[in-house]
Amino acid sequence: MSKPVQARFNRRQTLQTMGLGLIASLPLLATGTRAQAANSDITFDELYGKVSVLGLEFSEKVKQLNGRKIAMRGFMAPPLKAEAQFFVLTEIPMSICPFCSTDSDWPDNIVVVYLGEKQTFTQPSQTIEVRGKLEMGSWTDPETGFVSLLRIRQAEYATV
Image (tube, rainbow, N blue to C red):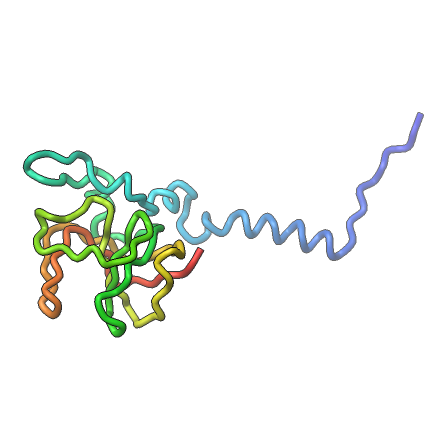
């Protein structure tokens, strides 16, 4: 009969094992549950419940997340001017800004992002993740006249 094999860990292996457990639980520590963390992410496909002759209708998810911090991935449309405090997040890379004259012309695959602090703009082909507070409803920026249906305010972004 063979002797049982004892598991032997050195200090490095023990720290790595403990570290992996801690890393895996970070979303739990930050938000309480992984489900809560996942629910705060939203995609372009989840923005609107339906499109009718009366226009776009916000999805239930957007209604629930209105006023809450969210994360969203997309592409930065070229800004209207270099020193702008906002940009348009698009579902697909664009070479020109999809500026809309009224909210009835609002495309269903863009969201306006108002930065909390100025950041350097990225290339239109670079995927970014934006984090900030979701705001829904028609609003006209008094400074630029830009009309939007959806906005992410107090935002920051990073390339992914």
